[in-house]
Image 1 (cartoon, rainbow, N blue to C red):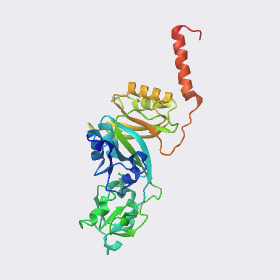
Image 2: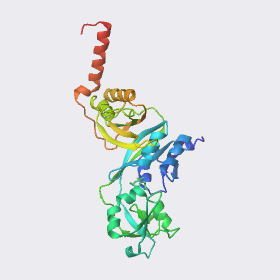
Image 3: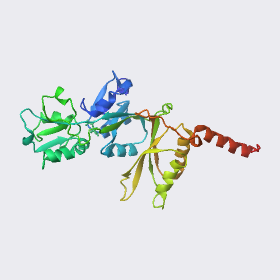
Image 4: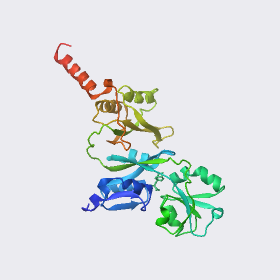
Length: 313
Ligand SMILES: O=C(O)C(=O)C[C@]1(C(=O)O)C=C[C@@H](O)C=C1
């Protein structure tokens, strides 16, 4: 690995994508080399191989839910860590080569997650149109200038500053408040310090064929007062009906209640992937009742030690 590779950040490009905007929020990435890649797999491959120090990847959209390619890659590639999360509001425009009218559009090129977020508008405005999937929201409009397989493309606002295209319609997203959550991922690294507004991400499998095992997994968190802000299932892929769970917890691995819940999860689950504890993008402070605060866990442990050593209880 050369010195400059160790400073490179990978992102889904070209410049102007929402992923690029998310990377722009990372103070440490300013002034460092950025590498544009074509998909999440390539971005994480850069991290694993050491070609890049970190990669920005989309993980969740407020309309479409979890980005499955990202969740599956994080579950299967070992030794990755999430360093931080970043939120980007996502709005879309429809663009075309100059001279194209909305009535001329038969085929629309779009990133699949972007297409899903504009589906209602597209069905209404362009009934019967075809969809060509594109690697990103900037690749779609850029490729309109290189090939005529699509008549129009879904793109981020401001795209016409970069390419000689015309806007056919603005605000085509079905939900004007849509937000995508991105995570910055590196190779395994020590967890950052607690901020009091933290999130912990894990992926866990259930022991197979045991009744009540999902409930038992959820109890690991419930009995320690740990709130889950996300739980989604994804197929493991080895047989029908086998799923893993992608889970975000309120709190940091250095919070006693979270650490205790993770120990319970580790004892219970045949496969736990710890993805990291990192500051929340919304700065929301996690409040827990006294019963689940650090002191409560430490006092209980002291009490146990005292019992063992024969102190009066
Ligand atoms: O194409 C882009 O602009 C991206 O950054 C990718 C991506 C995604 O992968 O979900 C990001 C945000 C939008 O929700 C749609 C597409």
